[in-house]
Amino acid sequence: LGLGGSDLIMGGSAGAAASSSSSASSFAAAAGGTASANSSNELTNPAAATNSSSSVLGYKLLEELSKSWTEHRITMVMVRDIFMYMDRTYVPLHKRRPVYDLGLWLFRRVVWERRMDDLSGCDEYDYCAATNGNDYRNDYDYGNSQDDAKGNLKSPPELQFQQMQQQAGEPQMMQSQMTQTLGNVTSSLLLQVIHQDRLDRLEDAPQRMTLLRCMIGMLIELEASGNGSFNDSMMANNGTGRDNYGSRRNFNASSGTTNTIPVYQRDFEEAFLGETQDFYRMESASRLSHAGGLSGNNNDVNDIDGENNLALNFNSSSSGKPPAKYSAMEYVQRAKIRLDQERDRATTLALPEPTRTALLRIVETELIERHAKTLVDMEGSGFASILKVVASSPVGAGKGGGESGVVIDHNRVADLAAMYDLFSRVPSSVNHLRDALSERIRLDGRALVRDQETNSAPPSAFVKGVLAMRERFDAVVTDAMRGEKKAQKRMREAFEDFLNADARAANCLAVYVDELLRIGLKGADERKVEMELDRVIVIFRYLSDKDVFEAYYKNHLAKRLLGNKSGSEEAERAMVSLLKAECGYQFTSKLEGMFNDMRISKETAEKYRAYKKKEANSPSPPLIDLRD
Image (cartoon, rainbow, N blue to C red):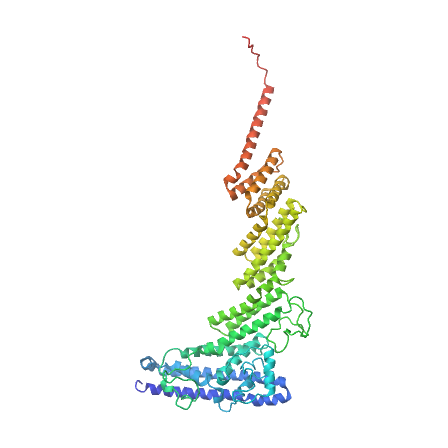
C-alpha cells in the first residue's frame, strides 16, 4: 500500500470522478430536456411554460443532484473505510488529501464546478430553461448588451422578458456569462425556491425545503474540501485545456491548487444575503409607500400586488387591490411575522450560525432600522400619535383608572409595547422612541405652564396636571418600554426641563400641598395619606429650586399652624419627614423648629390654664401687712 498508495488514490479518484461525470451528464439531461418541453408549451400556453414545466424540471435537477450527492457520500465512506490504514500512514507523509476529502474535492471539481457547455448535449441556453419565465430568469445578469457569450444576437422576446424583469425590480445574481457552471445554475434554483417560499407560493413546501437543506449541507461539506495545502500536481492540466477528469477549470500546475474560495460562501451565502436585502428593502418600502392615505389608485407604480413584483402581498383584498393605507401597527405586526419566518427558515435549512446572524441582521436593518423614524412619526398610527392619545386620557374615576383617578389606556400602551419590542432588536432605533417620549412630555408640560402664565387655571390644577402626566408616562416607560433605564432618564430630564423654566412650579406645588394638608387629607386613612404625599415628593424631586419651594412651604405651614387649620398633624409631620429624607436635616430644621415652638407654646398655655384653674379653686391667702 505504501508503494502503490499514489496509484490507489488515483485509481479511486478516477472511479469517483467517472461516477461524478456520469452524474453531471444526468444533470445535463435534466437541464437540457427543458428546451423541448418549453418550446411545445410556449406555442399553446405560455403561462404553463413558465409556471409548471420550468418549475418541475428545476426541481427535478435539484432532486438528481441530491440523489447523486447522497450516493457519492455513501460510496466515499465505504472507500475511506477500505483505505483507513493508508489514510493514517501514507497520506500524511506525502501530503496527500485523505480519501474522503479527496472524494469531496473531486465532486466539487467534476460535478459542482463543471461548465455547462462541457456537458454533452447541453446548449448554453438549455440550462436556463429550468428557470425560464419565473422570478429568477434574470439572475444570470446578461447586462445591457444584446449579444450573448457566443456573439449571437439575443432574440427580441428574450430581451423584452429580461427588461420586464428588471423593471419589476427582481433580484439578480451577478455571475459572469463566460463561467456558467452547474453550481451556478443549482444555486440560482435554490434561491428561487427560497424566494417562492417567502412569497408563500411554494408548492410542496416541506419536501422542497428538506431538499434545500440537503443541498446547503452539501455546500458546507464541500467547503471543507478546499482547506489545507496538498500535492495535487498529478491531477493538473494535461495540456488540452481540461484537467484529467475532463473539466475546464482554472488550475495552477505549479502549486497544484484550484480556486480556494469557499464554495458555500461564493456560490450561495453571498447571493442569498444579497437577495434577502433586496427583497425586504422593496417589501418594506412598498408596505409604507401608501402611508399617509392614498386613494387606492390601481395604476400606482408602487402597486405591490402584481404577479412579478417582489413585495409580499400581506394584506391584499380578494379583488387584488392594495389597501389605501397601512398603519404603523400593522407594519409592526407583519415585521414580527417576517422575522419569525426567517428565523424558522434558517432553522429548517440548518444554516450555519454566521449566516443566521447575518440574515437576521439584514432583515432587521431593512424592516426596522431603515423605517424607524417613519414608524414613529406616521400620522395617526405612529408611536408619537399613540403616545399623544395615551397622554390625553381624561382624569377621573373610570375604566383603567387607579386610586388616583388617572385613566390609562392600557390597549394603547400595549401597542406602544409591541413597537418597542420590535425596535429593541436594533438598539439604535430605540432612540427614536425615547425622543418621541421626551418631546411629548415637554409639549404637554409647556401647555400647563402657559395656562399659569395666562392665569387661566389655578395653581393646584397645574400640579394635578403634572401628577396625571407623571402617572401616564410612568406607565408608558414601565409597561411599554419595559422599565428601560435610558427611557426613565429621558422622562426625568423632560419633566425637569419645563418644571424649572421659572419659579412658578415651586410655588404651585407649595400651594397644592397646602390645600392637600388643610382639606384634601382630612379624615383620610394612613394609606391614603402616604400615597398622596409620595406623589407630591415625586414632583418635588424634579425641582431644581428646592429652596424656593421651602420658602413658600414654610409660609403656608406657619399659617396652618398658627390658624389651627391643619387637617392632620400626623400628615404634617409625615410631609416634613419625607422632605428631610430627600434633602437632609438642614433643609427641614426650621420646619421642625416651628413644630417645636408650637409644642412649647401649647404646653405653656396648658400649664397657665392649669395654674389659673387651681388658683380659682383654692381659698384666698391671708393678707400681709407691709407696714410691719
